[in-house]
Image 1 (cartoon, rainbow, N blue to C red):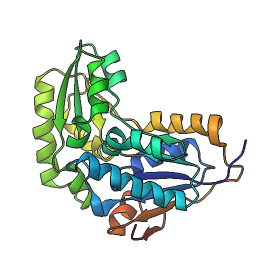
Image 2 (image 1 turned 135 degrees about the horizontal axis):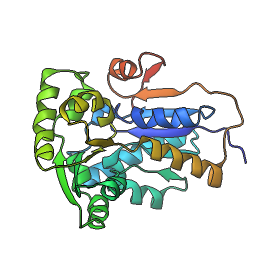
Image 3 (image 1 turned 90 degrees about the horizontal axis):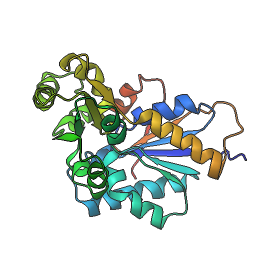
Length: 258
């Protein structure tokens, strides 16, 4: 089964490019359209109603671009809106949520840390997942300010270092052995996080798992592209220079109001 239509990927901003990168690496022949809703970032402080509305706006844009499958490359949008999206649209969705299961399953100390947005940690989906692992102590930390610093291009600022140290030290003191990154922006912080965490603490993000699930849905439901490598397309509704920089200026970024 072949289908040359593109895969749509959206996030509240540039962070979902960490998910896009994993998909692009696994499925290089697939055309991808990435949508950065940076004008409305971060989603983590918004209400569920607002998150659902923004997610539907992004989906409408991507469906208008003839996407065959949509990846919600945002933990907050997935945990708050994926149910509504699947109910309202006749297109396959791949969501992303904090990887609690692998961390809790592998943890030897039975203490894991979750760094995520307020919207994700307060969501019904997150709490249902967390309840499945009651024998594991989960240290939850809202990453106030992290997404905005990344969106503003201040990835390696003193303020970023200060925030990360304040968020991670209590987890270290609590004896975590796994840190789950519950926001698609946060993988870009891994080099800095590794400088703060002791070497034995493992970091888990969801990029590879999302890419594999995307591959599975292509195989089972919509089909793979029969074309050779396709150039990815990137749209943002805010400053394109930050998105371009996070992509190492390898691809053209188009600013578009949506």
